[in-house]
Length: 208
Image 1 (cartoon, rainbow, N blue to C red):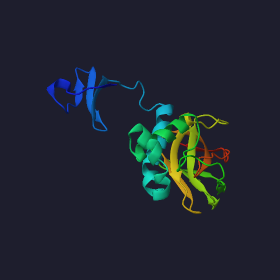
Image 2: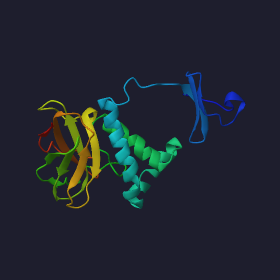
Image 3: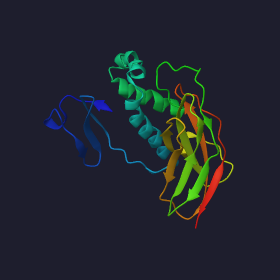
């Protein structure tokens, strides 16, 4: 990415030129970069990272002013907003398969949620996944993972959804649309300070 001061005889050029260069503005700074077309925008890795990004973007508003404030110093050092630093830091954590932390620096004293028996129920091209929460403790969210084969290891590459924990309410996710076949799932919980639980238990369901 190259920062520019007057791309295309303009201070606010945007768009793509000849399918080669893309002009835009990021945080008030004009820039130009090579146009990139993902080879597979729905690859398992991209799906997993987007699922975490979506969760973090929605979670920020609900974490409260006090945890939000812990990101201010780190954000100021990079001349970005606290929200952007929260997003960036936690996406990098997840790339290393670590759960997100709502405050910085992360602690390691939170108590994980007590999870009940997870279930999967087939619907019309969908599978309803339910993760009961017996005791919330310091639970932040539930991570849902899917594989096309049994006895799989959970990773950021097979993450399909992240949903917040709210007391002892069941945490649910509707996976779909799906083609006919058998799908295997597992879930893990995460604490507010980013501790990832063990896998809760692999389950499967078949769509005719």
